[in-house]
Length: 252
Ligand code: 16G
Image (cartoon, rainbow, N blue to C red; front, side, top):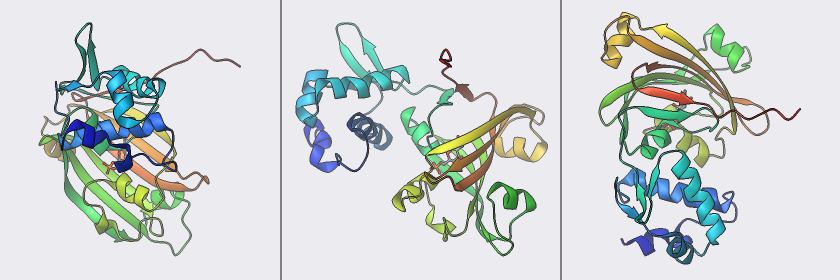
């Protein structure tokens, strides 16, 4: 496939899939994730991207600028835009609701997971509260050691109401991909971060010394209608992740 075929809008642009600049961004990210757009390879200039995609230059610029700001694309004066090289530390935006698979792809890493638990269970009290479950409800659990290019990055334990994820074994690579397919991808989330020292079991899984610094993150994600779709507790290696928040001057 050449770049013109890859960017052919008939393959990815749809009036029902949200803003056009985001769709273009996702297409480019898919190219990075699959390796079609390799690290350091050049991206066609804005004018050519507009011609190939049938989008306006303003739309193209909006997509590429956001990717420049997120470090996925680098721009060099006079020589154009390039896919960014992979970096050892991963920056995750705290204002965007992305999946681990997407975060890693954006950095040029191939993500994979080692399964720790996957199935339908009776809920623990914490899950009943977080997911607002009824007395007879079950919970779908997905626990994984998440890796980027074979390097352990995080331990993630996700719990979902069983009616929203009836068959957890369908999740092979990306939970959000399965939820998106079923029209259940979360649109909003609350995340709580705290610093921890890793206990022996978690440290062993993450391949670091017991007591090393880590980040505990709890994410509660919601569907558009306000229902909780996911309650995920994660433990990230402290030496691999930078969480970045954009702050704006309050207007009220
Ligand atoms: C992220 C989320 C996690 C979500 C996962 C889905 C944080 C702290 N956590 O890791 O809540 O379940 O992505 O990733 O960002 P997946 O679609 O690759 O399975």
